[in-house]
Length: 484
Image (cartoon, rainbow, N blue to C red):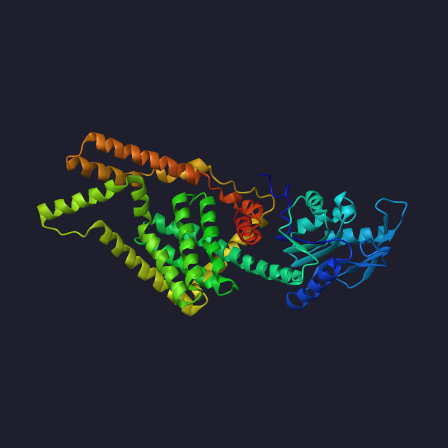
């Protein structure tokens, strides 16, 4: 990945309104501009006003451009049969459009450009405006694109369309309006996910460094509260599942917190909370259930990992220890399943209670609000440093192996092996246990090494998930000063 200057960030959402001449692309853009202006403010760009047509599916005799910022109409194309394509450009308007593109304010809410056709597919016409528009990184750009030329236009733009909407579709305007509204939701998710990641990387790292008891419960409860507060601003609250994914990805990219086991734990919390909300609904019960599941997972994730590594030998070793305590010391210890269940229940009640309180509050309390604002402001300021080099994530294998070579990771295996030998088990059985532990550990290491948080946004866009891609990409860009 080269520097951000070599690859301008581009718009957050790029939409193509497609169709042949006369199918209503320009009308659709004009309606979108009117709708957006009454709800979200000024729209930049221009729409084409066609002159008379010899046939419905042919180009017009001339085109004028209506500048949305000023409402003016300026000449653009005049039909000239001696040329191919048969149009001549107005050079005064061309110069004015270039000046407009260069002066486009950063982070503009909506830019409309009409229309991209044969000239643009050849790299001419309106296409020379694109580099300046891309540098301005508008939030949403909508292009009217001649049907059949979408692939050529994408190639010239150097960016795929996130959405293609047929101008002739009966719900085309509704699709555009929904995309604009969804963009705001995904932006909110990116901001909250980035703030949650910042809290994990600062407060979370401090708790782990200080070895505070029950720190996992504290952080998981805070994650549940953050998802609950985020959901109140969303038309589709189930999307809060992306907040912990963003938080986990940022934590994995942090030089001080790049352990992948916590990252995977945070992702699992999001899946559990999101599943509860999807099944039970966005209500008090669903949110509380989600928080309880997060707490239960925080209590059992380490045990689940050791069960994967040690299998049934872990349970046998615990039972042997319980019997030895009962025979030699008269101590009655609970069975392992009961112990795990009780520990998980306590965590579930605590985390569920925190999310229930968050549901009642509906907005973060002042201290948490201040912390979120500080993290958001600090993240947003990161790429503003001129000439700052993008943060390079650590080696995937080195990051994944970090937990694997910690002494705490191996201690349960050594403990179980010691109990097996004390109980009279053979050295061969212990050797098989060590072999299983090592083999499963290598498999887990290989699987987690495949995770590349820095490439999540690009991968999501390739899958057609522009919303999550925007939320993830914007949060990562603010934190690292780079965009995939």
